[in-house]
Length: 111
Image (cartoon, rainbow, N blue to C red; front, side, top):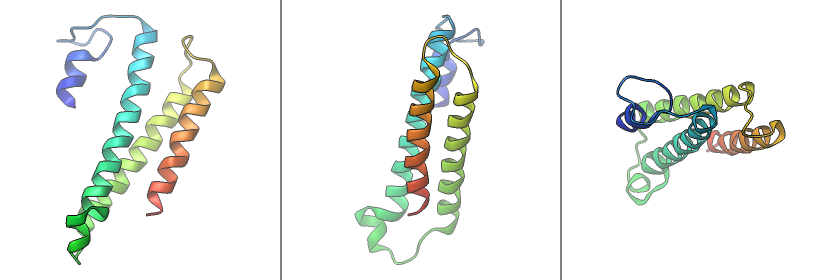
């Protein structure tokens, strides 16, 4: 993911191959927020719910703590998106997107 961010992060970062306006930057931030949520969900599956994890009676405590930290980082990122104004998306759409994912993340934390 860090290679993707380094190469395709909109803006003027050194090494970036994409240089565009704020709208693309905002779209990038919304897309990566959703990708990070998906990554956290895949980790939940790998550690707690897939066949291999269910077969193992011992849960990796550190992995669960890492997952909870990842989920909190996703919530923080979504809250930051709500505070960042954008001309590309009306505020009610931004709030709907962020709040919808935040509710989903809350449900993930109650696993």
